[in-house]
Image 1 (cartoon, one colour):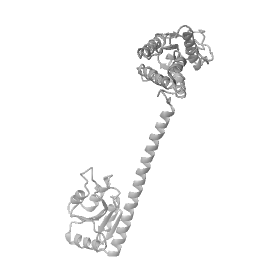
Image 2 (cartoon, one colour; image 1 turned 90 degrees about the vertical axis):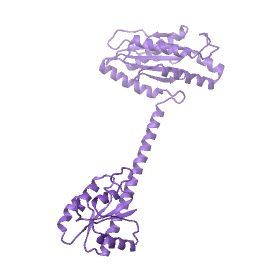
Image 3 (cartoon, helix red, strand yellow; image 1 turned 135 degrees about the vertical axis):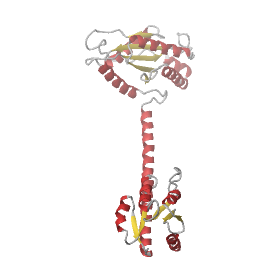
Image 4 (cartoon, helix red, strand yellow; image 1 turned 60 degrees about the horizontal axis):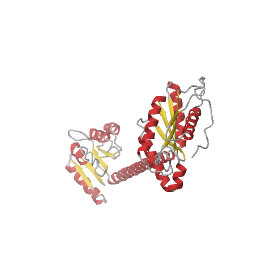
Length: 347
């Protein structure tokens, strides 16, 4: 780290440099004009502005660009503004001090320079610079740590929203998204659809192939379901065990049926062997579809329950198919009256 001496007179710079060297300051830079000072500071180089300068001693009176204007330009550079500038002024130049301080000068010494005063003010400025550097370093470290904590918190939040096995949204996250989508559909008068999905004969699959292979099957099905959704607002979640649920905002029954059938065919195309399944000796899906336009009196959970009941009917009638939930009443409360979701579907 160094001290920059700026004075147009070599007769002033030479003895000042010699004085500082004899008192232990060996890293000294000199400039005979403001432009040379700017060059020494690397003001035109975005990669090395400052170049390790800790303090600047700047003569006020210089031909061309004077010390006051040079000080102003240095302080306007955000990379250099923390470097203390000590103005060097003659006894009769006190009227310039106000302008120098307004330009950003931190201190001043008068000519002829007194050694004790120079060294004291120089030590004070160096301490100020190092304290500012320490503070800036701590602020940067704080920002870095804060940023890292934010990233960790975001990752923890993301992980808390995902199912650990399949990587899909978990049930809690789905419930939050469903509530938000219901309110939005209610506000806009748009349709909302839900698909309840179950892997057919999955208990028998686990009993035959083992739970580790069963987990691999769940992951393959989850991936196929996720890839089968094209819109950013559509969400598939693991609802529990081998059961999945899909949220389709802004989707009425015809569109929901198309999506459901596409998901069923996509999983079937995986051709995952299942020797104990009567449906082609491979893994298949059963799906319940329910759609509604939310109203103020309708219960949000009634739509999920309706899809769940439709799924139950599919599983009782052979599986590997989908069924659309039938409205239970044309009342203002919505097309579906409240039913508790079926706790135990046939395996």
